[in-house]
Amino acid sequence: MNSESSPPLSQSNTLICPNLGEYWKLGKVKDSDQIILRATGQQFLFPPAEGYALRYFTGQFSLESIQKACQDEFEESLDPNFTEQLLEKLIGLGILTFDEVEATETPEPAPPGGSQLKPCLEWIEHRDYWVLRNPENVTFLQVCDQDKTIIDQIGVRSPQAIIQEFCIPTNRLKGLLQMLAATGMLVGTEPAKPRKGKFTPLKLLFFRIPLFNPDRFLNAHIDKIRWVFSQPAFVLLLGFLSFSAALGIYNRDIIVYQGQQLLQTYGGSLMLPFILCSALVVTLHEFGHAFTLKHYRGIVPEIGLLFMMLIPAAYTNTSDSYCLPRWKRLFVVGAGILVQFILAAIGFWLWHLSTDGIWLHQTSFLLMAAALFTLALNLNPVAKFDGYYLAVAATGINNLRGRAFGLYINFLTGKPIREPKKDRWILALYAPFSLLYIWFVFGFLFWRIFTWSLTHMPITALLLLAIWAVYYFCPRD
Image (tube, rainbow, N blue to C red):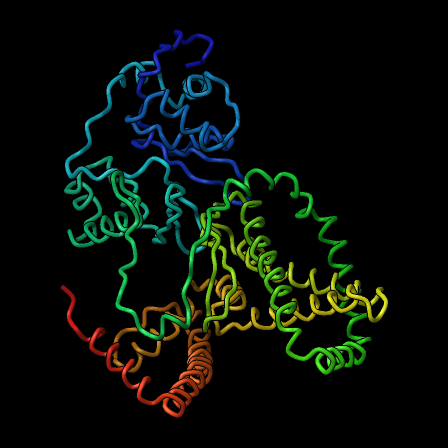
């Protein structure tokens, strides 16, 4: 039915928008911000705002509530009749009929079982799997093709009908519902919070302190720097870094000599300015991750402090990058490393062009040294820094370390190995290197702390160890 021949829609804001989920599936177009609406033999593309609104076409939400949700999401002034115009567009395209719209003035009752998927969810297709994304809580669920088809029926059909149609055991559907609830995918659920275990000294080796949600700030400023991600800017940057690296290698003897002279002259007094330069490098590094993910329309829910072996650093929650294609994930991870290269190059040129003996000459050398030092630490693929996440994105093996250890555990215990054959050799090689790193680094650290404590304060160390043992092994309430 064409929109020109349709009767005028009701102007009541209480009109409930129809449920598209019975016949249509909503998804995201690869390498685009457009949303696709599919049915058998038909598909239509919608811009981001309209695609976002279509998530709420579940037969439960009014025009007013969908309009408000779109205003909150896009933080821009939409047409006051945006949702009504979208409804008329759907009728004009033949996706809905006027009779369907008029018949949904009251919400449809939920099917038996009561579980309903949140309307904000979206499916993202990858080569070997699907990711169900929950932008409300920034959680994800990776599933196979059949599980996706089953999940699409939750809230549309009863659990008994789903079990009968797909010939699956009850426990499988129950397991899917539990995973959906644990990740906050179902209406009325929130993501499960990790259980806090008792304190152990190992927790001092690695812990995080969340500071703030940067997403609103990133949304406000990303359009100002999108030119950075253009092809001409990338070519210029590549030329600048290549020339800087070549000149730096040519002057490597002078750079090493300058570092030795600074250490001999200032000694330990260099520690504080070096730490401040490192903090600047790490902060800009994290914003490199954040702005790159935001450039790809991702969500950055958290920036905070990271402590590894009590050494402070920063971190950015870029888990939303798991929904991106592999090359975009690589760029999100690599953006922080690229920022460090840029800062090292800037420090090199300021040092190279400034006069020896002035503050700028020394400070720029410290900036270059801090950028290169943190870069070397960051590229380590067996520690969970950017080198590790680059390996994850490059191989496409999520949870690389855990799955590598799991491969050997299953092999030694005689359990079946379920990893794809193409991934097994990568996992088999990664696990020994990761284990050696943990043994040598953390084992050495613990041994030094243990022997120093027993040598310098044996009674205090043993007393603290006894108190911790009583606390740790005492049963919970």
